Each structure stands twice: as C-alpha cells, then as structure tokens.
Length: 605
Ligand code: AGP
Image (cartoon, rainbow, N blue to C red; front, side, top):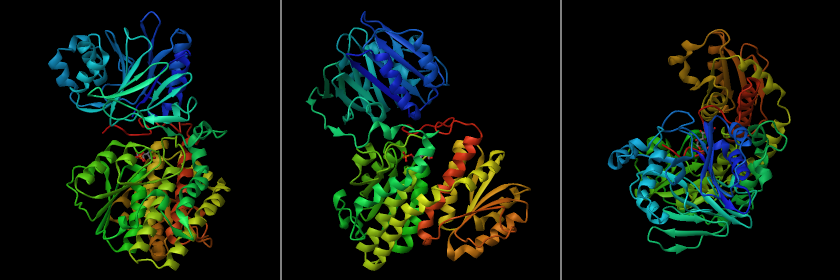
C-alpha cells in the first residue's frame, strides 16, 4: 500500500509530483521521494524518510528543470524505514517506483548476480537492477522480459535516461489509474491525485505496458497488440477529497455519514422496497442460496458480522463471516448455491481480492460491496453493489462502514423478500427504519459534548474494554478497532456474557469499559454483566436507548441513543464509537488521519 504518481507534459513536474504525493500520502507515509528526468537525460532523485512535508522541504532547496518524473510514498514491506530503502530506486539507466511485493526477489538476485548492484534492502531495487541488466535499447522488450521473471504484485512506473519525456508503467494486482489531459499525461495509484487535472481517466489493465508521453498514452499487451482504454468519468470532485474546514478528514467523514447513507440507499429504494434494477443485480442471485459467505478485512469484516446477525435469523440459512486472509487457506465450503459477499471500501485489499478469486474458482456466486468505482474487487465480482460514500481519506474507516451496513441491510431485505421470508409490509417497515437512520444519525451528530467528555476520560487510559451482546457485541469489535488504531490504547471487545470466563480478571479500579446495551432481548443480561464489572471498579461508559437510566451502580457516564428498532441502533452506536475514538486520539495530539504503521489500502499480503 504505497502511493505512486507519474507525470510527463508541458509543465514543470516537481510540484505536480509533490502535490500528488500529498494527496496520496494516506496510502503510506514511512518515506517519500521523486525522480525527475532532466533535459540533459539525467535522473535527479530526492528522497527522505518521514512525511511528504519533509520531501517538499528537501526539494525546495533544489528546483529541478524537468517536465517528466515519478513520485512515491512508501509503506515499508521489505527493509526498514530508511532513506536508502525509500523509492525511487535507480540503477544504471533505470529509475523505478513500485507498489506491491515481489515474492521471488531473492532468487532473482542469485540468478542474475545482482548483489553488487544493490544498496538497499528492498525488493523494488532488485527489479530496477534486473531491468537495467536486461535493457539494451527497447524499453518494451526489457519490461516484458523483466515482468516475466517476477512473482508477486506490482505497479511500476519506470523512466530510462535515454528515453526523454517518457514514462512506462505496468501492473499486476496493485492499482493504477491514468489520464491524458491538455497539460500532459498522468498516472497514479488512485484518483485523488488525478482529479485536479482530469475528470476522465482509465484503469490501467493488468499486464499491459503503458507508455506516457506529453501528448499521448499508449497501451499494449505483452504480445504488442495495442488497445484503447475504457474511459471512465470521476463521480466526485476534488472538494470531496479535501478537509473543507474540518481539523481532520476523519471528523469530516464522520459528519458526512447521513449524506453518504442517503446517497447509498436512495437509488435502491422504489415504492418503499429494495430495488437493484439500476445495479443490474437480478433477484435470481438470491434464490436457492443454501449459504451466505461474507468475506472481508478489518472494519469491512465487522460490517459483515453485523450483516450476519441481521440476515441469518431472517433467511434461516447459515451466514458465515470470514477474515479474508484466513478464508484463503481454510478450504472454504463454497459451491454454486453459495452467495459470497466480499466487502471492501477500497476494492483493492489484496486478501479480499484473492478470497474473491478463490470463491469464483469454487463456483460460488459473487457480489461485492465496494466504495471505489471500477476497483479490482468490483470488476472481478459477478455483481457489485457500490456504496456512495465518496472518497474516504482517513485511514480509520468511518462513513465507509456505515454505508456498508446500509448496503448489506438492503441486500438482506431483498434476499428476504425474494425468498418469501419477508412480506411486503414487513419489507416496507424495514425500509422505513433504514430511511430514518439518516435523520437519527444527524440528530446524534448535533450533540457530541457528552462523547467528548468520555474521550477525556479515555485519553489517560492504557487499556479499554468494549462489551455487548448480539449486535452490540459486533459493534464492540468495531469500537475497539477504531480506538486502538488511532489512539494506540490497547482496546479489546468482548461478548458481555464471556467476561466472567477469564477476562474480568483484568478489570480493576478505573478500568474503562464501554458497554453497549441497545438490544431489547438481552438488555437485562447485559445490565447484569455491567454491574459485574462496575462492582470491580470499572469506569463504565454506557450506550443505550433507555433514557431512564440514572442508577450510578450501572454506569459512570450514560450516552443516550435515539430509540429505534433494535436492528437499526447499530448506525447510531457506530457513530458514537467513532467519535469516542476520534476525540480520544485528537486529545492525545496524535495524527488522527495517518496513524503510525498503518495505511489506507492494504494491497500487500
Ligand atoms: C479500518 O478502520 C481500517 N482502516 C481497516 O481495518 C480497513 O477496514 C481494512 O483494511 C479493509 O479495507 P477495505 O475496506 O478497503 O478492504
């Protein structure tokens, strides 16, 4: 998960590359660098550890006269975070940047005796050295031969000192998009870096060599056959990828949720019933399903767990939720009557993509819930139900999660209708409750003071527990992930009924416990579990719809949620948990949008 940008055109490249890297920094931010091909056919490289801001400072000392260059932000896979390991990597006539993992780089070093050419610990530099070794005078021939030796995922942007003004690119799995504008040709890991220059773009096809010049972009397959790109139009503007006055992208994206949920569900509701006609998803997809298998990672997987809890009792068929990186190796029980649902904000998470490919090999029916149009998972699924959250820049996923829930709820309602598990009246009521979510979340976002006081208590904590039962347990998982990934507080989610089987030993005076008690049928049980931890000194922060709670023996802080049907409180609970994590991280003065060690899209295994 690195950020890649390339430009060749009529304008100076340096600032275009640096601006693009600033837009792409959320993809990885251990180190950054640019390489510029100068008019006297020299490669000028600037790179450093740390953020893009450090690279901008470095480059400001040396304005290079060049209209052709490549830039990279790194999330370290091979080798530590050092200047030597930062991209671009240059060897002889070749300068190259890479997103992905080359799995056989060590064998290549041995086979081509490259060790003496290398100064870094990276797999990427090995590719640069191999390419330089194989390169004589034709870049296309050398690139073809080089990639034929590689095992693994890659998105390369390459320059050769004797090919002035030209950038070459080729990908396998790792994402790349490109655009030809009046000012020149652009290529990047994702749209956020292209938007300022073009609303039209295309997805770089895998194993095709792209040649960018200032006037043209050509695409040829490995047999030399030229093809024309499928031009797509961006469905959001650069404003959507800016903070617009918010202190962090994460807070902006939390507050965008009512609009994002509305944009996701409104086009799929006709006469108060779920309707996927415009998504070209046939009702038959949901017929004769003996099993649903939901596969995802991280927050997306947590959305799948909520969907399981909502769908399984409705359809009365097994609904399994798998961590994609586990699913791939557990010989899953998939057949033509299994509906496999992959969930992914980026649509590029390699584990989820490979899980999808496995499901298709096993003849499963596949549908994906994806936020990025034209992404790999979307393109490779039989069907796709896009969410319309707009770009999500903060590494911690917020609006993508709630729109995934909304999309999965629509899908569950449709499946129930198609299989006569829901009457039209029941479906009407379900859809009304789903529509009401937008206003309930809006109402919640108008009063965040109480949540901010919760965050003040957590700011000094080293550990925190999230507990609940049923849907509240699945939300606890998401609440714990949000808190730990941006505040670095060790947080664990526990089924409330499970605490007394061991974990309650960790509860001591003042231990923060965020308890969710929104599910009517288990409410009294959860309250008992809360009393158990409270009796042992826990500081309990309670989320419930029960406004009557005043009993201090139950909690230290109560956050009341708008009363809704039990199935739909998950949206409000999610927003509260997101805000708790956000304000805690902000109070600690941490980089909320770009937490340490993380990156937005995990395109490496
Ligand atoms: C969530 O806050 C994280 N950013 C992470 O768990 C993320 O949800 C996961 O990597 C899946 O990403 P995807 O939705 O793009 O596939």
